[in-house]
Structures are given as structure tokens and as C-alpha cells.
Length: 69
Image (cartoon, rainbow, N blue to C red):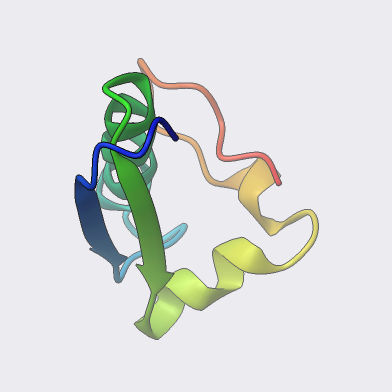
């Protein structure tokens, strides 16, 4: 980061049961990174499964790239 001081906290609460909602926190995080804003994604509820190796390969929403770990 460039030290702009901008920060964003994103909370994800969905996984494979709702791939559209599971994808959005990571899309927002990547957009924040592109705008030189520090982003932290916190996973809660079923979203914690996304952090498991291989699980994110199964979680994809049409029109977006798969959530690969």
C-alpha cells in the first residue's frame, strides 16, 4: 500500500450455498486493492469454509472467477 491511510473492512458470511454472496467480499477487496486501499476480509458463519484448501474451487458464481485459494 502507498500509505494513503484508507482502510476497508469487509465481512463475508456465505459460501457455496450462496455463491453470489460469497464472491462479493472478494470482488470488493480486489477493487479496494486497485484503488490503493487496505482491505481486510473477515469470514464468518459458513464463509469460514472458503479458507479451507480446495473448498473455494467449488464456489463460483457465473460471471465471476472461482474463489480459488
